[in-house]
Structures are given as structure tokens and as C-alpha cells.
Image 1 (cartoon, rainbow, N blue to C red):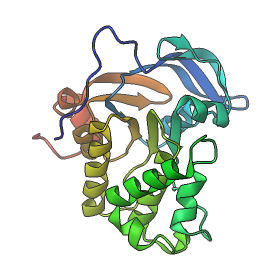
Image 2 (cartoon, rainbow, N blue to C red):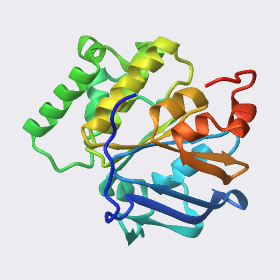
Image 3 (tube, rainbow, N blue to C red):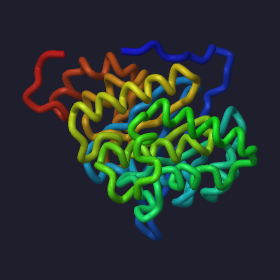
Image 4 (tube, one colour):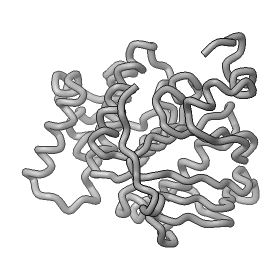
Length: 252
């Protein structure tokens, strides 16, 4: 496991979620969610299908409104509510299903991630080159239509597009969905490198082993509530977590 960056005890949390409630119209999905994301850490959010994980990601990226409770960004109340405002703060979202522009080239998809940035062409070119260094396959396929890429390559492109906004916090919803174990390992190594470079991440992941091995801290969500949280190495050894999410596995 890679060494990860730790904030000092005097630093405010990067993002504090307090008694958060949200949903869709009159349907409440999140019921009093409390979470703390520290700067420089990889945080995992795990839980079964329908637990509310993707809804929380949508709230944090401004796609769903908050109906109760609140958010604090670096110790200050967060009044931003739209995707553009959240992105302006430094929160970028890699959605479940990747949501690439299939007919556009890989490089044009990456450039779409810069639409809200005030950056020079030289800075944008530098950042694209960094992504090509992180994901060499994208450099090889930079002129190829994104819709013709393999699933793993599309996930690389989606992550790259998120990185092109120069985020402080990257939200990744279902990192491993539909991918082979080898590709998941490659993506996990890339995320660890980004974390070593200073990026904070919140990763939603149904593969509990992947999530807990990748992260520093993890939260367990069930029916729209956080039911357990702690250091990831502790949770991976927790008998209740193993019974609920790891099936027949009994040894760490």
C-alpha cells in the first residue's frame, strides 16, 4: 500500500458533512449523513446497491440539492449549490458509467474538463501531458473516438477529464464497475500516485476489498445513513464488515 499524505491536527477538514439530508423530489434518500474528509487522504464509501452512495456523490458535485443539514469546505460553510460552483471550489466528479462524449476524441474529452478553468494553453498542454504520462494508453489513442475505447480505457479517460479541472477533491463513483481485476489494480496504482502528489479523493466502490485496500479511511452506508466508519485497515478486519460484505472470506 502506498504512503499517503496526512493533514496535521490543526488543519481544518477539507470537507465536513453534517446531518445531510437529500433525495429526489419528495423522496428522501440520505438521512442525516455525517462524514469528514481530510485533506490529502483517500476516503472510501462502501455499501450495497441502493444505499445512497451515488446520491451523496451527486450532492457533493452540485447535481442534487441539499434539503437539510450542511457542508463545510475547509472550515467554512459551503453555500455553493450548482455543479459549476462546486467545480469552482475544486470538487470534480467522475460519475458512474463514465459519461464520456462517445463521438469525440480522447483528447477532446480531456479538454472538456477544462471548460471552467482560467488557464493558459501552456498550462492545459502540460496537464494533458501529465495525464498521458499517468495513462499511456490514452496517449496512444488520443485521436480515437472515446466511445470505441475499452471499458478500462474509458475509465482512464473519465478520470483524466476530471483531473483536467485541476481539482482539490476528486469524487469517483464505482471505480471498478465492469473492469477486470488487472485493470482495477492499474487504476488503483494511478490513484495512489495522484494521492502522493497531493490530491484528495472520495471513492465509491462496491468491491469492498479494493475500496479498503486503496483508502485510508472508510465509511459504510446503509439505507441512506452512515452506519460505521473508521480506519480502513481496521474495517477490513472487522467481523461485522466481513460478514456483511465479504461473504465466505474469513481471513484478512
